[in-house]
Length: 155
Image 1: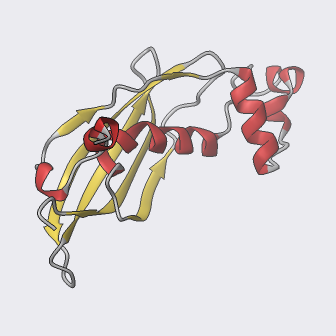
Image 2: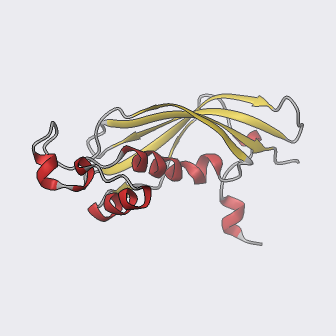
Image 3: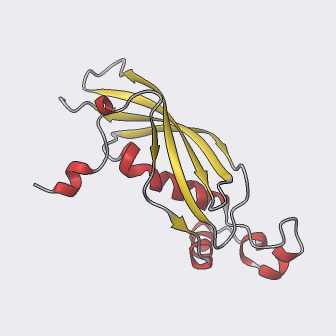
């Protein structure tokens, strides 16, 4: 038996509306993280890559690209929320609440907003969640919601 697989994720029966999961995974953003993501996604905007350019703009320093922050925070939530998921059905209301800078350390939490049985298949259900990410100053930097299709543990 692979113990890691057994502890990774939850079944639909394990979630309760109103619960908040504080994700144990944290991440300090490095310049390399930001640069690699920009290169992989072909985002060459100088605000994300050029220190001299960014110094003359509103925040005075390089901004970490928002799609990286979104991807990272989704990943930080997998062990607690979607580790056993059949599918992430949608993402909605993605809000970049504050900028993220190189050197910021992110933490995240997810709240269970709704839970329901699948209308078509008895072996699964859907949770509706809101995930929030914060920097080391406890400033909210990202918020998003999603529906996740998750199996029952007796399926």
